[in-house]
Length: 411
Image 1 (tube, rainbow, N blue to C red):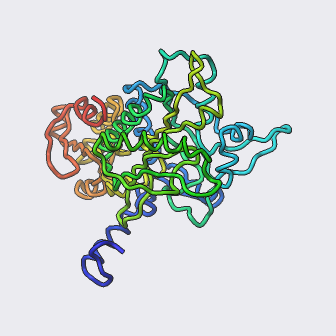
Image 2: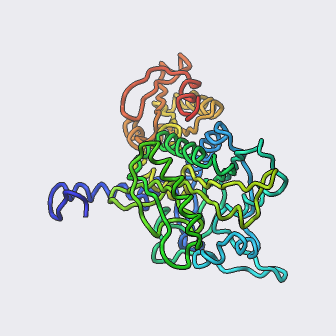
Image 3: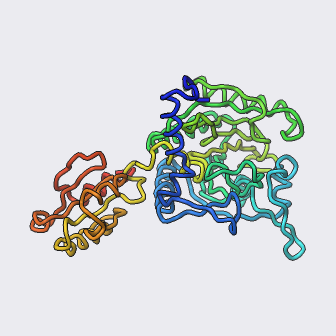
């Protein structure tokens, strides 16, 4: 039930209508962002051209944000031998969420449920000096969860996840600083994407064999996360049974229009896996491992963005950033030339010629596009276009280079 809403009330009806209209499962398909097919399988959505454009824009933005903050990017396989996940602890504590092993040539391979074991092996691929630390590794990679069909839904709960993941290997005394730096990145990305966190959650271990049984290790990691949250003046809730099997985490929760929560971004302190993989740096010292995801899985992120923005995405993120609108067929050659120049300037642009309807009808059909470039006789003569913004305001004759610059997350 929505707060302050009662069934049958006018405000409740309006709220319910907005929820239905902005439900990413409906709107995402209407906007050509994603779809599913039973022949591919439940929980395995595919990206349509508009969604692929958004996904690439997010990938490029996060990659550059991480690069500017000292991360090195790596790529690793989506498969691993069963013994890798036995070593990492996933097999003992997380097997229920993993797909069953595949027997290949007498060896068992598993679709990875997370990227951290691969990054641990990348760290230990050669000897590390303390001068290299903190070593910050990041990857956008696939991971797979054996979710039950009853919990799958649109892009928010899927079996194939493209995760923005990263791991910082540092001396234990630097872990708090790296956690805080990761939260800085998360908050910067959320501001750029137009995301507002519902709340911060300190996720702790629960009872039973799902969690590594090392109370001292858990207490030390929890103390680090609490210290960071306190120093940042960040309010948070504590919840038992929501931690990773190897350690506690700070989860940044988001909420959809109906008030349903999901975890998007996360930061975790892990003092378990470095021991399992015998990670060291010169002098025999054991590093701490800070797991962090700036924007989480791209599927869940895009689902939330669809609902937050209702399809009217920021210019840098919009699948189509500019639409060229000739007044009539007489302006079509000039409009086609303008389209070519838009594409060369780096804008995601398309042409809506006059045979698709009146100018007003075409403007309404492209109401979610940030920039509408109208080409009439005067614009043909001047070699420019009249720029109309999505909100209906007129920007006049704006150089394409300026539009392209305004449509990027980084200047």
